[in-house]
Image 1 (tube, rainbow, N blue to C red):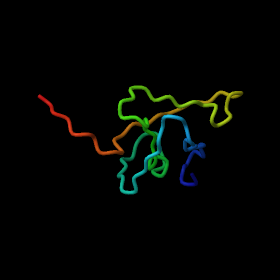
Image 2: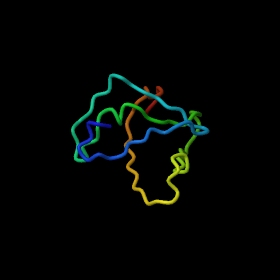
Image 3: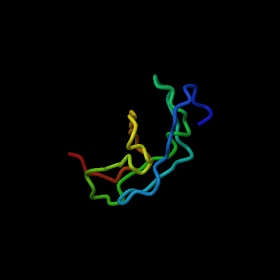
Image 4: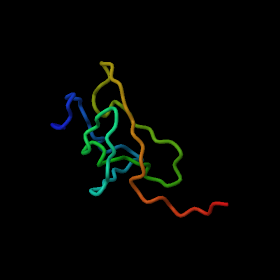
Amino acid sequence: YPDDPYDRYWHPSGEIDGVVTVARDNMSFIKNFTDIPGLALAHAITPASSNATILTVPSSEMGLEENTYYYNFYFSEVLEAAYQNKS
């Protein structure tokens, strides 16, 4: 992302079994301490099954096995939450 002041490498996830990519073009972002480029957060991944309780993202999809990398994961609601009865 050219708007990243630290020239970090932002790699969107490709096709992974059991995972789908979602995107929103109307997301609002709050300035934060890590200066994340807004476009990096415009796409997300979510389990393909709504019954899934675990989301696994393998690093081998990027060919990074031989080096050390640090991952940051950011969590937000990109999809509308299912209606839930709360008592």
